[in-house]
Length: 503
Image 1 (cartoon, rainbow, N blue to C red):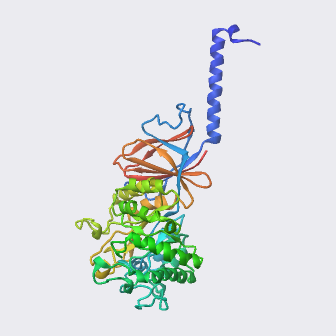
Image 2 (image 1 turned 60 degrees about the vertical axis):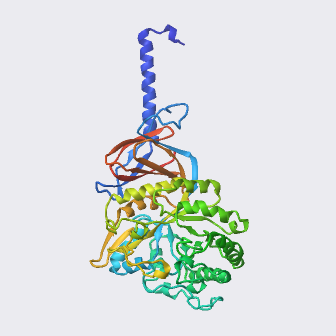
Image 3 (image 1 turned 180 degrees about the horizontal axis):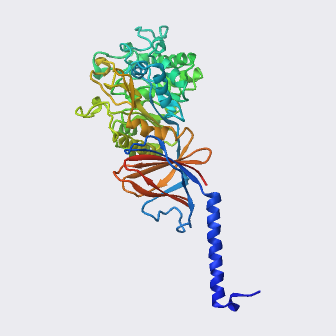
């Protein structure tokens, strides 16, 4: 056998060249056989709307350092599938009579297309978590304010009735229509119990629940769940009060008592599987401040299956939700309501509904921030409204003023019978269609100006990466996972969903 010491310089050079060629051929063949393709779906200011782009390929690269988790390229997005966080429950919006009124104003074909666009997982947004409130609120606008039992003193709930919800614009009708196009779970909050249970309906500052009616209100919740179930509608999560202190003026200490001594025991006695979310805090800071007061009561905490807050502090206090999740990891945390509305401080100089494409970036950033905080479910408020941001219900005694225009996900113009999908619809669809219930958030890292990413892993080992470009320029980026890397251009003012198999 000839060794290198016996070879001429020319022979050594030729041997090295052959080795290099073999190595490069090996890498080339490996890339051909094992290279992963990435599906890219984009919505952009340039006109893309959930547009499927040409697929791109990963290429094998040398591991850049002893620590493969280090980013070595300033335009690189690094994915860490070994870092796992919360499991997702889903995304969606709210069933409200106002939305069904708008949907029913359309011809049957257009109405079917509208529902498909919201609930179909292939052609639509694929909403998987929906809110369906208990009786009256500001957008239950198919009639006057109502509860399910307006008979004073009927603590046995003999006159309990969900008749209104069965009407053409009612919530059960709405839910059943949506079920034709997709599957979702339902979360239900309550603004107010029947007025006769309140200490003072006329004085909004003192609309507390009379404690003598705690057993009756527990039965009210029970009958709601049972009567809906008789109609084939399962309520998966019950939230006792929507924004306590804003609507019903009940304290968290009373909610604690109601949970521990009334609702919890009654549900257990009747084998109710519906999970309880305590209540829906007005905003993130309220949840952080008040939830621990109830959770320290072991008896009350045992009745709770999740925590829910609203996003009306807008782009603030995400760190408070992250702290809640860290302190109470056993509870899934949901953001269950947010919108733009004049009554919530949206400038009256700006029109609602808003048709501006740039609005999508605002919501894309808010969704990512909530998900990074540990949120498992994300629910917008009005799913469908008309060209006036309504119709809304007016009931001053219940905190529902007139001129209450709000921003929906979809606008139905009841005058000319046209349907308008807002920027919010498209940005939210990037999450709801592609990040399905059961997917787990995994780690990502990037340090690119105004580029944000968040990633998820499916049970089938498929990676879904969301890339939000909040700049006005196209961005050249690289995606790396382990020793695979791909480069692509992210359009200006866009959101892109990248889908590929985990290696």
